[in-house]
Amino acid sequence: MKRTISNLACCMIISMSFAQTTYIFDEVGEISPNPFVTEVNGTSMELYNNTLKWIKLNYNYPDEVIASKIEGEFIRISGTEEVRGTDDMVYTIEIDFKDNRYRTTLTKTNHADEKNGKTVVNSIELLTPDPKYGKSQKIIDLHKEIYQPWLNETLNILNRFNLSLFNYLSGKTDKNDGW
Image (cartoon, rainbow, N blue to C red):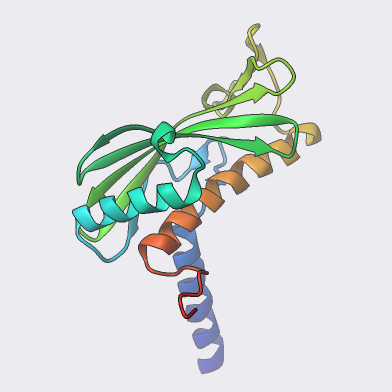
C-alpha cells in the first residue's frame, strides 16, 4: 500500500511539473492553458533580461522578433516556425514578468501557405467551436483525421518554445560550459 501511494505521489509530482510548460487542446478545441503562469526563481528584472538573452540565442534576427517590450515587465515576441514543410506558423506570444514567475499568453497564431505567402488559416478562429478556414471563412471540422498532424505540430512548436524558455530561465541548459 505504501508503495502504491509513493508511486502515485511521484507520478503526480512529475505530471504537475511537466504541465507547467505544456500546451494542450482542451475539450472545446482551444489551446490551454492560455495564459498560464510558470514559477521560476529570479526578480522580474532578472527574468526579463534572461528572456532577452534567450531570444538572442534562439532567433536568427532577435531584434525583429521583439515586437514590443517594457523593461523589466513585458516582452511581445512575433516569430515564425515551419510546420512540417507545409506552411509557416506565425505566432505572437506575450511574456509578462513578476518576481519568481512569468506569464506567457498566446495572442495570435496564423498559418501562411508557403506556396503563395498568403495567410490561409487563422488559428485563433480555428480553435473556436466554429473553426474557419481562409478568406471564405468556411467552417471546418477539426476532428477529421486530416487535421490531426497539423494540430499536433502546432502544439509541438508552442511546447518547444515554452520548454526552452523555462529551461533557460531556470538554469537548465544543454550547453557544456566546461570547455
